[in-house]
Image (cartoon, rainbow, N blue to C red; front, side, top):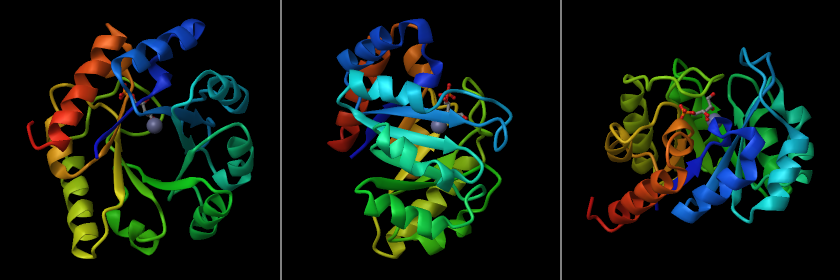
Length: 223
Ligand code: DX5
Ligand code: ZN
């Protein structure tokens, strides 16, 4: 099943609730919540208090992407604030398997992310352990960047490798996904699609509707 996860990083924060309602009216599945610490990535976004407010506002699955050095320090706090899925970066988290297991012990889903230049092989020890793998398709840190074309082969290779081992783990893609390249990432095997600008810039409801309907057709083999 293909899932739409609009990234609120691209929303107007003075109207966040209103803009989330507009996305929901178009039919999203998750909301993607990008946490940046100014260390692991060269930018700072938002954190725990904002997540608490968002949690109180929506029943949608909250998919939290921790672009944070040593994210294991903050996992419990984000869970308390209402995260449903916590994704940590392989490059930033040394006790990686322990952190994934801890997230599971807390009853939440765990994702493991890699940056564009990190090889997919580093994910292999997490096969069958993590619920989702996030293949970044831009350098993490900023919304509105261009999709890095070489990442398509990484998505394909990861999907093939998982399938060859009998696994159908979710593959999330994040960064620069648009109406122009969406079919490329779907056909490569991604099924959890993060979109910031492509949902929140322009008519939010229309954008979310366009992608959610496309994903339904794709699931039925009609797109
Ligand atoms: C980048 C973030 C992304 C970003 C995607 O570091 O992880 O989630 O918001 O934004 P777009 O879709 O605009 O590239
Ligand atoms: Zn993200």
